[in-house]
Length: 180
Image 1 (cartoon, rainbow, N blue to C red):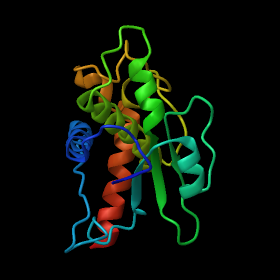
Image 2 (image 1 turned 30 degrees about the vertical axis):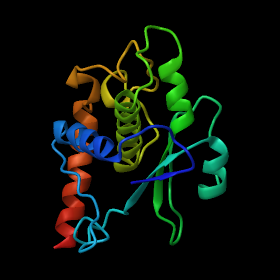
Image 3 (image 1 turned 30 degrees about the horizontal axis):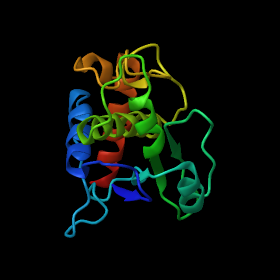
Image 4 (image 1 turned 60 degrees about the vertical axis):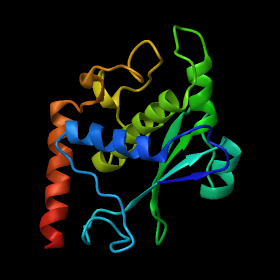
């Protein structure tokens, strides 16, 4: 996970911790690359995902080569050829969401870091599911605002629905077996 441009006052440690917590709720262990193992998951056949926190849509266009939709807070850009799949979170739009009314808390390093982790978890789920589909509730809801989940303490807001959870576990299990 890396930042590009000026995504705002974020804590990468907090983002990684929250991202790992969300996936742990769904029975998945997140492994971050290290110097000893730069590719993460022990040669897993699932393509590696690069997570970037971008400062703005312009930065996304320069670095990844795609345009974000007008309302997008984050997106998954599927790799082709030798390009890795990239999950990008737009830090300026996340900050804006936290600053807008609707009972939003102030945009603090804590709230922004939590929001970015939750946006990244949602986009990573799209990659793991191999689908752009959304669910009615939980992690894969199509849209959130401050009133209904991005900063909620209720873990149910970050769980996959049973069918999606089964699909993720099946795909990760297949990748794990192929890597052995």
